Amino acid sequence: MSDTVRFDLDAYLDRIGWRGGRRPDAATLRGVHLAHARSIPFENLDPLAGTAPSLAPADLIAKLVRGRRGGYCYEHNTLFTLALEALGFRVTGLAARVVLGADRLDSRPRTHMTLLVGAPGDPQPYLADVGFGAAGALLEAVPLTVDTEFHDAGRRHRFVHVPHEGPLEMWVLEAHERGETAWGGGDGAWSGQYAFTLEPFSRRDFEVFNWHVGTNPRSPFTQRPYIQRTTAERHLCLDGAHFVETRADGTVTERKLTDEAEARRVLDEDFDITVPPGLSLGITVPPGLNLLT
Image (cartoon, rainbow, N blue to C red; front, top):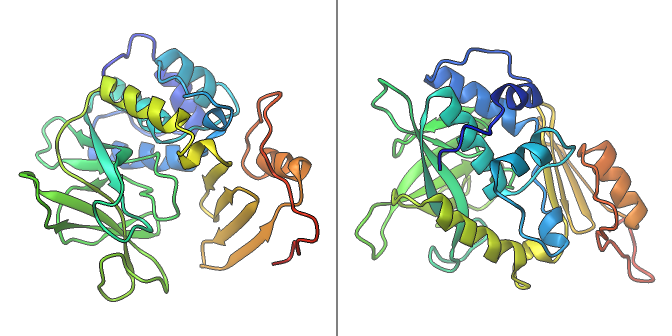
């Protein structure tokens, strides 16, 4: 997946506000990961317009770095791969099965891109992922170690192994969520986010995944806006017309947007996203709907 010739590392680091070191070590990995997660929003406006977004380095730079836009997992993690490789890290793409909200481990296909990262001289591999559009996403890269709780910028995560029929170990990333029922049982606090093996996937694999997820009419990303943004103070999510703000203290505020104009204002002011000209967000409110429910 290496393509650093056309990659502008300085522009990328300036976009995410990273002023720290550039050594390929764990501290840099965690810091750059957190800076990216808090700077570039998750959004699906290209698939909503019927187009699979480009994963070419020049296009990622133009859109996510120089443009006032974000992207979804393939864009975020391809861009992050290019940055990490330019910094001297080894990166392997992995394909994951999203289990958040699923009733069974195998009820969904592998459609999420995540990253296995190695640093020179460090025997410990790390899982990095700046493109998972959920409140339980990683904020920092974490060591790939089973049954150990990690604290990443205020969030809590762990990996568990689960049985399955394949020859490789199946890893599940779990997030600790206040008051929610855990996927797969447990104490009601740990919730599965996605499952993966360590089988490597290439850039060409992800180009096929990207085209399928970005154009299939059954894909949720082609049907309604799905936008997320994380800052140190809050996590924002727009799912269709449903707007949710979760503060760092756990306070949640929800409301329904009234129309297309309000949705555009929210994307501009809260998500720092410029909607492409001519794109309809599809935010309509049926007559008689109580907007306060």
